[in-house]
Image 1 (cartoon, one colour):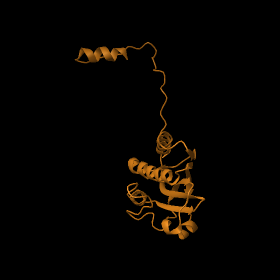
Image 2 (cartoon, helix red, strand yellow):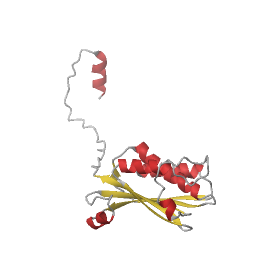
Image 3 (tube, helix red, strand yellow):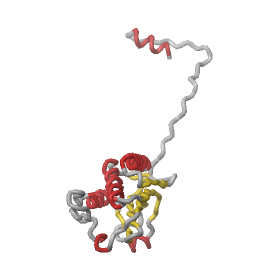
Image 4 (cartoon, helix red, strand yellow):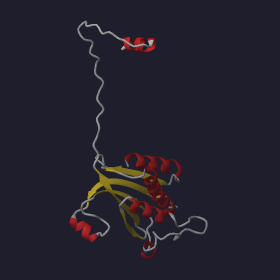
Length: 194
């Protein structure tokens, strides 16, 4: 996810109005997620585009990623969470805010607060579908005039890190001779070079 967030940050910095400051805050020990990179890219991009549209006069868009462990108490309070899953939480915060009526409908297909021709109302419903398809969930906090924060929780996976073995000097032996036998001259010559 570090790479996806970095890519989204670059896209936003290059294409969003200069009045919108884009910040990222990614934990250095971020756990891995098993998922479709294209779909997760779409989740982040949809959230960022909505943030851009919600800040016509500029502001700050912050994308954070951190590790989060859902304990039993948290799982009881948040029915979509599972206590045995480790989640990675992505926060996206921006200014503006939504009314309670709007918050209740934001994930409905074709619901939009944008003027005609400016949006389809499918962005957040797509985000919700992708996140649920990855066994995750979303929480939203918003207050008019103060801002909005989307928290996307995705299950983490255990990843074994593979370390690349450093090249070692080729052992030359102690003057022994090696007999190379092959019926193809090219193979004999190539083997002698090794």
